[in-house]
Amino acid sequence: MRNNRFFFLLGLWAAKLSKIVLAILKKKVPYVPGYVAMKICPQFLTFMDYSKPIIAVTGTNGKTTICAMLADYYRKQGQKVVNNQGFNTLIGLASYLIYDTTLSGRANYDVAVLEVDERTTFKSFAYIKPDYMICTNLFRDSMADNGHTEYITHILKTHTPEKTRLILNADDPLCLILAQDRKNVIWYGIDRLESDYREVRNIVRDLIYCPLCGEELTYDYYRYHHMGKYRCPNGDFSTPKSDYLVTGLDLPGRRMQLMVHGQTRCCDLISDSLFNAYNQVCVLALLCELGHDFDQVNASF
Image 1 (cartoon, helix red, strand yellow):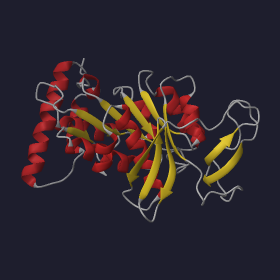
Image 2: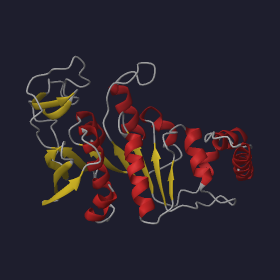
Image 3: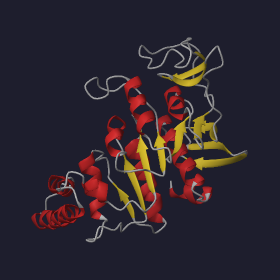
Image 4: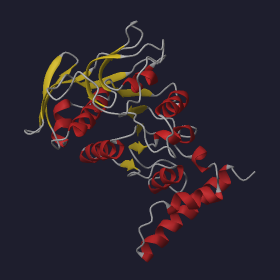
């Protein structure tokens, strides 16, 4: 059988050799090691060492930014990080894991921060079982790629491992679907802003009806797309309470105020973008849940 440990090690050594050859030729083709390894051993990822903490980041927007912030933070703490830098296919994941795997197949890193394409989580999570998974948001993407948000939500809900703890956007009702029948979900969100509005202004709405009873969802306010404060008239489906809630947002001044488990904290913003405010809140939520100091995380921004 080709997919035994012998072929895994053969694929690993060949991938390491390809990395050396690329360096000699001064070629930057980061996916080649994964391609070589999986050509030799198609089930290569089955035999990888996943004993170190694994954080997966998925969603339509914000994945690469969040992974970059997390990787930057861990490196500033002196830890060795695996980050696939946007190469979120199986070959990309294999390539970057290979970079920090010893010749005997043991993990040679402290933590893995992996961007995972929401469309292909059923492939990635067949091998990689993350300890934590961030889902930033879920919007309609290209029809050839994602089809419809119901399709993507179903894939994520069905294939995310039970042991994985979820960090989810409370302002996105599609994320609430992912949390059904799950325990230990951590929510983050942004409280009402002056820029929010009462009536629908966008043409596309990816979720209009309650997925549980079929009644049309009502909104206290809209932010963009289907994001905002929502509820089902029958009480079956509504915005969850955020564990990490932005209560004040000063985008021009690049500052935000948060309520974190009942305590008010302030944080610097990396830009004057609302999208990045969401990105930073979920990074704070994840790292604080992992026991890192809030002020230390804020300083890394």
